[in-house]
Image (cartoon, rainbow, N blue to C red; front, side):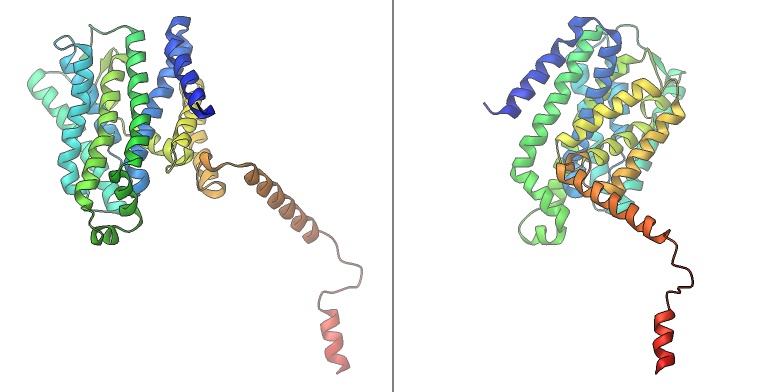
Length: 335
């Protein structure tokens, strides 16, 4: 058994046993970490290889949450979570038929707009037919059950990321990301492959939304369809390294610590930290945190020394009576 497998099993055992320690703060932080790890890994599963910037994560998450609000108490807990994931898949399939023919900024804007459309549609349905905007959930599973559910979904997302990436569909998605027209000429059906990847990615966002919905006693469209959920998922994946598995997992831990430590007491500092991390990664670490190597630190050190040397040389005063062009003009006068 290789060291990586041993580390994975040890981490899984530690996370699985966490509810036994009865520490609400540790369990809450771990739950946030697992949620964003699952969201970021599932987002990278599709958007990483294809380079399609999807902003529909909050729509998938919100649909899953509302499936819990409507089905909890009527269906068993596992069925509610599965229903949330399936609702997200149906929505992803419908919008994928329209949006996956677009690329670049057009795809990002359309996926964000359709998510807002779903939010306002559910708000209208709630007001018109139920006379309310939100829902109060009285029958909820235990916190340990919710934690283990989110842990299983996040672990399943990691396993699916690896398995799907090694499959022919994963290779086809990478080919589409590099050159979609060339992939089509080689026999790949771009629309079908993209639709499969998009729907598979959406299931995890919907299932996580269904599982996390009980964390709020009262849910409404503006809470569970919050665009910040989707934006933060994209930030975690980009900062961690969108083409890697371990990068989003590492970034999810960092973001969860920041979220639980700063978001409630210092929300402005929390948002500034997110922006600062993104700027630093774009400027100095384009491959994300996963691309960090010892050579990276050596290159930063050498660049900073060269920068300091250039500043010192530019501020060094010239000898008295000396002009940088004196030698040139002197030669011209001698001629």
